[in-house]
Image (cartoon, rainbow, N blue to C red; front, side, top):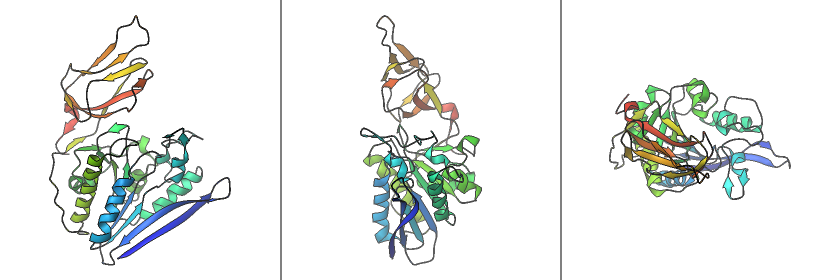
Amino acid sequence: MINAKEDICVATNELDQPISITKFTLDSENQGKLVYIQGGVHGGEVTLPIIKKLYSYLQKNLKSGKVIFVPFANPLSWQQKAYTYTVGKFNLKNGKDFNRYYGTDVDVNSKIANKILTLCEDADLTLDLHTAHNALPYTIFSSLKLMPFIKNLNIRFNDFCGMPKKYEHCFDYELTLKDVPSITIECGAHDEVNSTNTEQVVNGILNVLASLKMIDAINIKPQEQIFFTDATSIKAECGGIVNFYKNLGETFKKGEKLFEIISANLKKENICYLAKEDGILLRKSKTHIFCEHDEVLQVIYNKDAKNSL
């Protein structure tokens, strides 16, 4: 087994100090597949516990092929702090999403992103780990050719998004153009360490590696998977403080109360939002404080959910 660490200098900062990304490689020294796994494109998206568990397991159990890990694919996004909070989804200089730099030539973030692409352009599979607001784990994939991987990941919720223009220059978008299999996994909530979600994602990835004959089969209980192409965003009708009535993963019926907005106008009645259809709650904001038009919930209505594609 070859266990290597490499710091790759991409550029320099204002102090002429190196800006580097760190790559870890586990090479079984036996012929097999190449899998690339990264996290940390957005600051504050905590996926390191997943990567650490995978790395630890594979040091002892990788039998064929090679796995490359990049735990923090954009170190600059992690330097954007406001008090204790990491505000690393958008570049504060230009408002650009850090996951929209691949295949561009805009600034130093483009250099980082394009270097990342060179690390995985020969991969048999790439996995891009993210988190989202306060959410359950779910996959995002753009091609039906990826269905065998999606099935083996065994994650309950799966978003088949195709390749819409809004995702241009995302990591998986650019790799799909290069015919490199790529899946995004939203691993749970932003800025959170959740052992249940970590275990689910780790086991799913190990199951994929087993299907590629890179490790021995693992014991994993198959679960029913839900596929959707449309998750519905529910936004606040006005500003106020929100009281939630449903938890993540909870089903609801048409007409049930999902949340209410408590207005600062003491003479004004609270505004209750009732479900328009039967469905399930996939994601909700981590805050209770909303302005008009802010997203409060993201739900999957039963009419948009399928057991297969």
